[in-house]
Length: 359
Image (cartoon, rainbow, N blue to C red; front, side):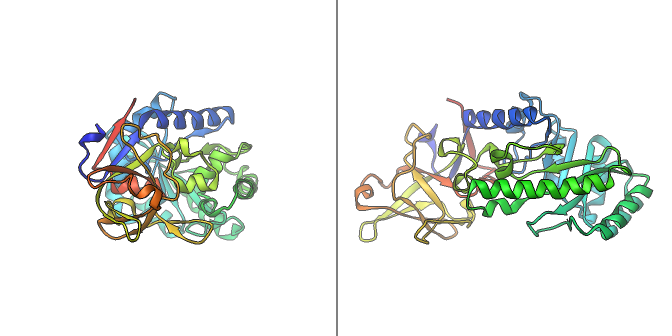
């Protein structure tokens, strides 16, 4: 299969994915929380079906179009974990006819619009900013939260589900201990809100969703639902944080070698920013890298080549920096593998060109 690759192709290791799903599903079950995985990472009906083997019935997506895709492929309990775009109300109403749909609100304006235009009962979460500062209300902004909840309480079509957050600042953590601390802080903020409002909304739930916290932390007391997504593939970013081992990374981007420069110990590959994205990590010496290199050959589970990494990207080009000791092991016409920095973005860019191995 690998021998037939002629252009950048995402290779997905099914066996590793299944192990990653099983591990997270077991943690959710042992922690007595609902497992509602985020499907934005893989965006695949085929891969989505793997979750059903572990009893998953509820999913998370990041857009109305993604919700529609998975609804058409047999999923009918869907949370769109992105603030409602009121311009998509027609599509939202169509989804709500056929699915148990949950939406996400961050303003009274959105709630009022939904109450006026929704044609079916729909679940609604309020997004809470617990430190990531991307979107949502601060947990201590109870004055504004009171106003949002009053809008929901009066609504005929909005059913309040609870408070939802994405503690994305764990992606900047420098250690497992820092991830755990962020998780505990996030949990406490949400539990304080739950305690404040549970007398009015008896079924109020707490939903959290970042992969580092869900992978590293063990205490989910008081949490009702977890929504990790990246864990199915993992990547170098998660490895650096401590969420996984290198052996857990389930995707590699296969790229043809198209040139070599011996004076700079550089390998030119067909694979650039439109395939990887431009997210990077830094080595301890401050050097940026956009991926680490393996020699897939017949074994895409091989470990990275020492001191060999993607150093630069342009649209179609990728430049691999290596050492004189490894330079001659790369030949024009070879297919090499790149472990991605951020698998969600790479998989999104490559979702039309991938292969699944299940050896």
